[in-house]
Every structure is written in structure tokens, then in C-alpha cells.
Image 1: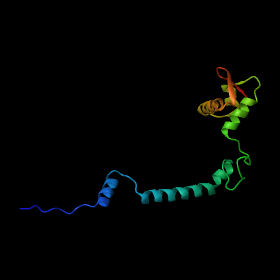
Image 2: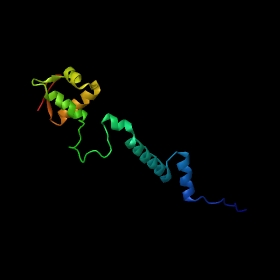
Image 3: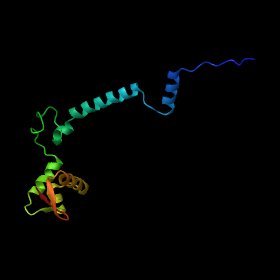
Image 4: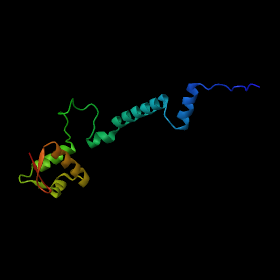
Length: 127
């Protein structure tokens, strides 16, 4: 007796099965997420919170030099520049009001880019 073969499974059905079992997003799922992200971005841009805080105002200025808000990088660099004989960490923190971790990261980047030099341990001078 010859055994009867079952129905053959299509490749598309196998792929769909594995995608569902292993929670792999499909193209439609990704498109839905992108649409939701676009909606969130427009909501954030139109919210009055960001316009009041000065961090983001839609349509303001044309380019990098036209903004009036300084970045944290610029604020720390200006604070270090204001001290002639170098600034220690506590002085920078008092002048900027930033947290310890944020200042340490900015000082690391300023040193990496060659904008400041370390005079002694914990004392920084603008170049």
C-alpha cells in the first residue's frame, strides 16, 4: 500500500508561521509604528511645553547660528573660559548648575576635541 501524502505547505505559510511564533515584526507592523512615531512628533512639535521652555520652537531660525539657546557643551566651555587660572569641578558645577555626570561627560568631550586642557588633576583651562 502506498501511503497518501499530506497537503504540501507553501514557503509563505512557513515564513508567516515562524514570524508569528518568534514575534518577528512584519512590514505592515513597522509601517504602523512609523505612522505612530510621525503622529507623536507632530504632537510634540505643536505642544506648548516645548515652546515655553525655549528648547524647541517650530520654524524658528534658519540654521545653527540663528538660535539663541546655548547647548550644555557651550555653557560648560564658557564657564571654563571665564576662569583665568583654570576652573575646578566644583566651580564649573556651581556656575552651570548641571549634574556631576553631565559635566564629566562634557569635560571629557571638550578635552577630546582639544577645546580645553587639564592643568592639574581636576583643574581645566580653555585653549
